[in-house]
Image (cartoon, rainbow, N blue to C red):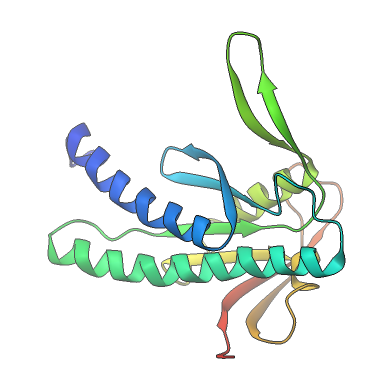
Length: 181
């Protein structure tokens, strides 16, 4: 943001967000909000998915979406590099657990809100150890998500990890990719 005008930043950011939003929708996710250059997406809403097969599908959709985002980011970075623009890195945190969704706010202003400790854990996974960024797109999941993925995903174990504001440790994995089906 120091090197470009607000107009240039807005155009660049909208290009990035448009590509990523398309992927969320393509993987049956719902965008809850844009947070500057971040996206908060939820899978398995607005209708509660409670059957294990539905939860598994949501977990796989979320991880597949993140993997697709990683591939798209590689392509965007190549394009931006050829245009003299900087390359971008991103982080994804995914946690599978209960949430509640609905209108949040006041009579003056409402927004679609997603509430629950699962949201907090996903956020903490995204921001965990920011300096540990081995690739342009780092995807971290918790054991609760890994339990639903099956054998087709390539994972790197980060072990039991303390997350900011959490009393209990969470078993963390980095998603490296997915084996061809």
